[in-house]
Length: 194
Image 1 (spheres, rainbow, N blue to C red):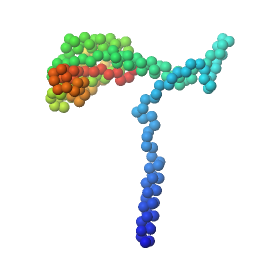
Image 2 (cartoon, rainbow, N blue to C red):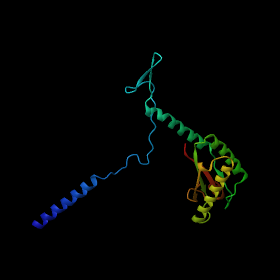
Image 3 (cartoon, one colour):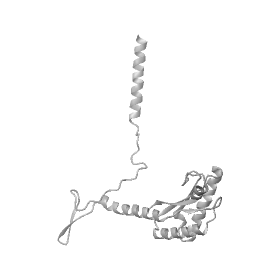
Image 4 (cartoon, one colour):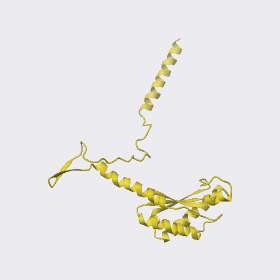
């Protein structure tokens, strides 16, 4: 009976140590990987806003938090506008050579990028399902590099362009015919910063 009592007490102590040891650890890190939600700008002075007299009139000072949000909202809007202006380019089977159509599309994309000099773009190289995963990763990288090189000749700074290859891992069309494969042999330009 004493042994079973000692065992129960020992188990209780172990349980308390486990619970007490876990209580001090932070389970969720604050704001890690979570973008701040946009703040809605209010019109007119609020309860805690400073009021500054200007030439016989009172003018509400915009709180620092609200003043900082307006440019962020504009940059998000301009980033989405830029993203919608950037078109995909397509490649022939087993090729990283830019066609005339791809060059024309990249020229249009370069014009949009020149108008947004603060934007950075990731060029994502993709392939169809033919060939091994390793081969397609290398081909996707050559395709992305070809687009990057051409964009730099059109005046887009090299430092604004990054490349990545997804090989055959991200098909635009899940089909298994030539129509689907043509859609999958592509580069996509993705705005990564406003």
